[in-house]
Amino acid sequence: MLKVQIKSKENIKPSSPTSPNHPPIQLSSLDHITPQIYTHILLFYSSTINPNHLKTSLSTTLLHFSPLAGRIHRSSSNGTLYVHCTDEGAVFVEAEAHQAYTIQSFLTSDHHASSSSPINEFPELLPIKKDHFNLSDPLLAVQLTVFDSGGFVLGLSMCHLIADGASMALFLKQWSSISRSGATINGSLPIFDSASLFSPQPWSASTVEKPQDDEQDENTITKVSIIKRFVIDKEGVERLRISKQSWRPTRVQAVLGLVWRCLRRAKLSGNHVSQVVNIRNKKMNMVSMLSEKDFGNLWVSVMVSTSSDHQCERIEEEEALREAVTSVNEEYVRNFIEGKVKKSDACWIFTSWCRMGFYESSDFGWGEPDWVGCGLREMKDVCMLIDAKDGVGVEVWVWLDEDGMKKLECDLEFLSFVSF
Image (cartoon, rainbow, N blue to C red; front, side):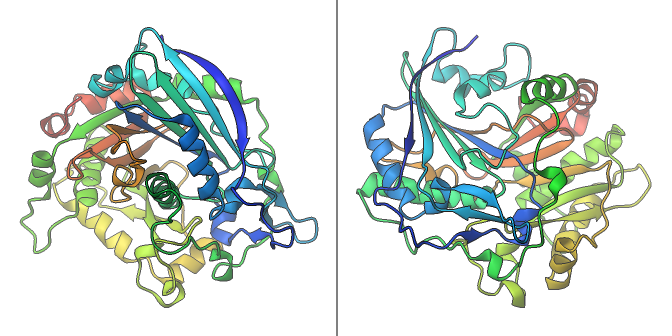
């Protein structure tokens, strides 16, 4: 069992005070309908680190990301959410890990969610142990855990109401750039203006407070859902992308197609899944000004459907994924925001962190991380893809109940592509 001892905890404020006249940052309609949770990421390094340098560079970075040092408030006049840039700061935790596990335990493990799996130890390496976010909570928290046997882990918890995965990658890119250079931000400044495109409606009062206690909820979730991580190497990805059709699936389409096909064959999924789509990359009039510098939630989910038979022919799922994502246009985004898009309650969620650059974005001056892991726990029937270290292979993270996981691991096609 991993033993982590907290050495210190402090609030890191921007290196220069934010003007008291700084206007509040309005959250967009897409922010308002985002799950009220933290997104957790863990970066594993086998090198050494200077904690004071890391804190200093974080303070400088927050000068350009001042909303992350503020707090979310709900307007008493119109019920919408906004960030008041009050410089309350981001939480920074310093910790030490002793005995049992080493960095190599995480890097060489099969990553199964058994009782001894390093994945089960992830909460110990995160500054915020829960997934749920309350409005009074910090928007960003960081934990630096140094292993007495060498190496360290950087765990980040960022409020999903203000940032999606691409926004987290942008923050890490700028923080690491400042850490390496001293004070220079990489490229142009981040943009906090998505509300000008997506005007918010009042936030639902039913989502303000969580009805159950966090610890009880975590125990309940982990009883019905376990987490496993599978790897498809670059050769496996290439085999999946071979197509007899006139088009070649992307890595994401090919791998998610495989997962969906195997889930359907085991009758763990129906003929519909929900695919998360980053609209920064979509070509439409309303988002013509969006770029990778835009910070916030700039995604929608689209229902993907395939035929009702259970033959699960190869390429059918890939084609359905491609067509659904291609169908996302300006009208769809508006309908999604207004709640007019058809949804299914019993539906798998497919999402991807591929091509967000978490490895290259996280070189703080001591090299890229040896491994990037996802710290989310309180989910079920979710599949997330993350780039492998080489940028070509793909890690498949699955949140599924124990019986379903056993069925997935017995699928012969699945076994022919993944390693554990």
